[in-house]
Length: 263
Ligand code: ARG
Image (cartoon, rainbow, N blue to C red; front, side, top):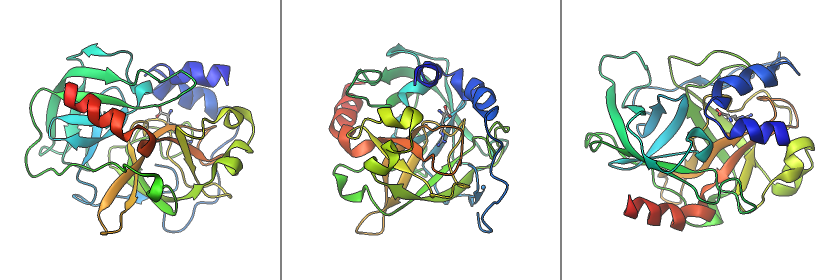
């Protein structure tokens, strides 16, 4: 856990971890037919309109008109920060219709890297996103922490692979905490109240380096998308028996809402 959590602490991990972790096991040879993220397919323009790409190499989701929810490990500290560019409104990062807005402030979870966990952070944008771009509501109860989840992002499409120009999406099933902890290695240190796991037992489909901070989401009882997780970490990508680990959004929903009201 030591080397992995050390990597997780820095945005450099986005690139660095891909290289380091790829030494152990090559990506799965067998890819599911439908699915690339790893093992997914291209998202359609407008399919997940609240998806955000952040210039440090992370994903995110538009939480309010002027705040992006991402991972704590994608940022270094709470405070004024004008160095991040958010790209919104496009699946193709090179599209001329991309909306690009700079950051003004970063709020990093104060409980990240404590025993409480909480791999989330908020990026305040210099101006509100256009009204045509909807926000993604977050789950405020644990009632949606089950079933099949959708993940999306511009991260590596294979373990150790390159960042993607076009957004990819994939579906991953919920993995309960006991099963996730039993995956050994870093998984034994899972924080069950703060982390939620997802992935197929046979591997092949997963988020990967550069997807960090992006949302894991599903449909709620009204068939609307709701965010249940934030891409956090995994041992390699899409390895059999090694689920993706996500920040458990419902646990931090009130902390996120209250922080968003203060920044
Ligand atoms: N920490 C990675 C990042 O910074 C995300 C890794 C997710 N890994 C996984 N196997 N689901 O982009």
